[in-house]
Length: 163
Image (cartoon, rainbow, N blue to C red; front, side, top):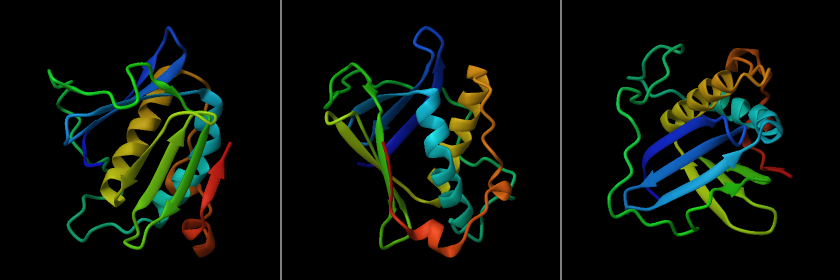
């Protein structure tokens, strides 16, 4: 799926993060991320981010990348292949493809699922949005800076499954 838009925002009523992914095909995928799930997935995301090569023309390491100046816009004729109710993500699988992109599969417990392909730039944006949403949620989670996460060469390339 070609990601056109991405948003991760705190849903105070559900006390979860709502992730919205809009594709270039006019589809929208919705997923709820719980505090527990975010705390479990962050080390793998941070390790992948630390290992992701920066393009030569990339901004400084502290820059977030992406465009944060425009709100998420749902297309008028949007389709929801997995339904309009957000997935309650219970499992994730992370692995690198042959081009070094992170393949992130999010799924409910033996139910609906979808996958994201995150190149280094999009991975940085995804992690920045996740950190901002966790901060807004005031969950007391400290998502460590990438520089604080120990990464060995084997950690960035291995496949990880979280339940």
